[in-house]
Each structure stands twice: as structure tokens, then as C-alpha cells.
Length: 322
Image (cartoon, one colour):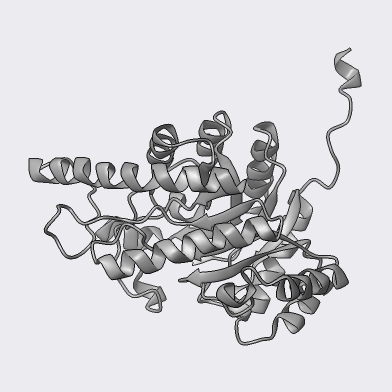
């Protein structure tokens, strides 16, 4: 396994400064934003696509700091009912796939997107219950939209030799493991998970069970190392479907936390071990979104915990079983 970082929190620094710092603290690889919500502070997608000189400059800088790219990231909504917004997200995603292929990067991370609840609606609609029945009908419509889009996009990714790693995220159509497997079944094996446990914790999903479920189908293409803490007094009063502003930390029922501040080191050792059990040996890409600390402090604490949890070698022979 490799220790990685999604570099978005360092968008105010040059990529030279960012790569140098990450290498100094023991990071092996980077996940680079190329559009959508992650932005493109460290890689200008349009300027780098089909540009051998720009690509060589990026790869040389990575080599200089002994880093590699785990994935390119462009999180947006290609299923948006606003055709212009959907087209923009689709272009970002397709160009990210093409750029990944040109850089010999095998993964692009993204969202599934979320359609409207019907063909005449104007805003995306996250359906979380099958009743009243118009919500079940809306959900069926959304899956039809998703199947039509992702079937073609998965074929495009396969032609480019690039995996699509979808983050299971609330307010997107795919937000939990069964939805992830459904989309994969409707498309092809290029569609899999960017497994981010932070969104699963507050939904009450067992992260290690979810890893086993998706891992048994070889459906984990990338992994985000990100923690969440549930604050029980608030959760007991209002549950976990919490619309309180993320910066009103004291009144939220859950918060994204740095690794180790939501779940202890023992849990993260279980996560790493379960990933190995299902055959995942890729990056653990730290995504820092802890509002109780700075990006650097949160990242360095995450590196500290994960460096003890991760395995640096491949499994040896089980001589005691012979």
C-alpha cells in the first residue's frame, strides 16, 4: 500500500512547494484535482491534455520528489438536470479520463451525480425513502438516467484503459455500497468505488463489512483516508441527517475529522487489514476536511496514524500453517 494525499487543501501553494512538503513528511503519492469541486490548482487539465511538454514537466517534478499519481480527481454532477451544468461536468470527466491515460494513471475519482426527480424538474433530488410512492417513481427514473449515462461513459473509460472510482456520497445517486454494486452491474468493471469511509460512518454503515462486500466484487478502485466523529448528544436530539453549517461545529451531530480523531488507531489497523484481505494494495489517499485544525496539522497527524497502520511489505509465507 502507498500513503497518498488529495492535494486540494494546498491550492494556495505551488505544486513545487506542495510536492516538496508532502515528500518531506513521508507521502508516497498524490491525488490531483483537475476540475469540478476539487478545482485544478495543481494541474490545469485543459492546458495539460494533449500537451507532451506540460505532461513531462509534471512527471519530472513528481520524479524529483519520488512521488507518483494515485488518481486524477474531478467531482461534479454529470447527471444534473441543467443541461449546461451536466455538459460541463461531463467534459471535465471525459477529459480527466483522457489525461489520466496520457499520464499512465489508471484511475479517475468522481461522483455518480444526481438527476432530478423527473424529466421536467429543475434541481437534483436525493431520494431516501420509497414513500409516498412518487418518490419511488422518481428513484426509478433517476436510475434510468444514470444507466444511460454511465453505460456509455464506462465504455469510454474502458477504451482509455482507466478505472472510474466513484465516491459514495450523500446527495448523489450512489451513496452506499449496494448502490455502488448496482451501478457496476449495469455498466462494466471499470466502474468501482473511491471508498471514502467518512460518509459511511454517519450513515451507520460498518466500514469493514462494506470493504468486504465491495472487495469481494473487486469493486474498490481507490481509497480516501478520512474520518468522521459522531457527537451523540446532538445525534440523539436530531439524528444524523444534519443540515447545520459545517462551521457550527458545536451544534452538529457529526463532523469530518482527521484520521484518529473519529476512530482510534486500532480501528484504522482493522481497516487496513481488511483492505489487504480483499486484495486492495493501492493508495490510502488522505482527504483533509477537519475544521477543528489546520490542513498541515491534520494531515501530519493522519500520516502519523496511518504510517503505523499500513503494511510496507507483501505478505510472507504462512510457514506455521504447513
